[in-house]
Image 1: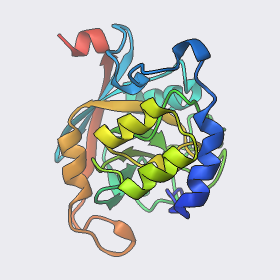
Image 2 (image 1 turned 180 degrees about the vertical axis):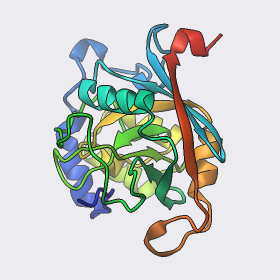
Image 3 (image 1 turned 45 degrees about the vertical axis):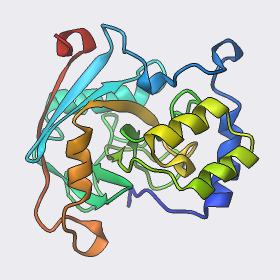
Length: 233
């Protein structure tokens, strides 16, 4: 299985994502509220501190929105499954992908030994810093994940989002923060970078060879799991 974040025609992707734009967020929560990913986390929210040979990346997780993806990632992290695993695919201004013990993009499995379904919420989007499951198609999640990089969204893409009726607070956040809105609805977002985005961005810019694989290994050395309250002290 080749878990990969695919590039699709933007008009089609955005039209499909429109199905997500008006759902997954309670009406009482809609309006100009800051997107969930940029709100201060609860004290007991799980945080994973990813130690790489390029620096640390700290990520808060959202188990209330993606319980299976979070359980899978946190269990693998605690068990050392990701220790020594490389980021096998990186694209500047787009994302960095890892989580495959084989380092090929074709390996890895979930903690249940089988693929599991997508968990998609309108409250979580592929803003820069989003942590999301990589897959080989709908409902084929295993162990691979990616972190969104790129602090800009093409103005023409934002205009298409306006024309398609995306919520204004989502468009505003993409305009100000950056990210990859065409991925919304196709992948399970389960976390967000809260420190170390500059490390993820630097990893996305390393020199690559065929298949967008870094010429020199970028390695996840270990992942520590804590809570936001402990992390923020």
